[in-house]
Length: 264
Image (cartoon, rainbow, N blue to C red):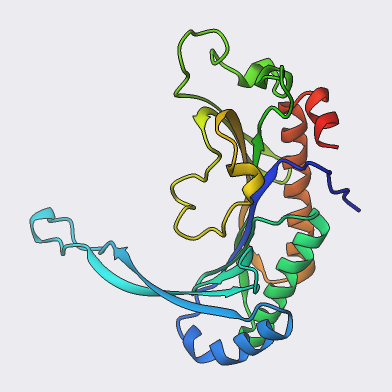
């Protein structure tokens, strides 16, 4: 069982499972929403966004049809406090939270939502499984710096160049036994925030991360498994666990013993 750190640096977590397209998803929503309410996700919202559809035409570029704009719906089932929610569309379900506890609790919650979906839709296959963590590295005491929390390999020149740092970035992409792993470390001055692609959809970040302004780092670790296979809830859980193992390895390779002791 995972142990929750007293001062855990994780401030945003998301997991997603992509499955076979369900074009008549709307007709199943009443049954899905009723079950989501039973497991304490009563805050329901529907959003319509515009999706670009690229046409497939002939070889003559002058006669090729122009890209079309098609409306697509996204459904959100949230907890009352607004810090955790499921997002559902015709090809994927995601669980995101800004009140992360342990991996076991988080993965059980995702599998619960996925099970509700499978009961209603009878999913055929899984296409991709992804897990992503954002951790905020902020010095906790006077006299501490990012050098105390991060290994030299991800610090770049952030501690060697004079003047106020705007941004320093490190990225490593690797193929692991569980799938692809992308590990990024962004160092910048200001307040802890989210990558632009997450801002419109994410729950509010806990105040303890955003109330402090200054030099900080964000460890953004994203692991994913892409392979079409028959739907099996147990296999999805095992894949999530394998992805989490690789993320944990990457995280431990990024931070120092001082950081782990400070967060324990």
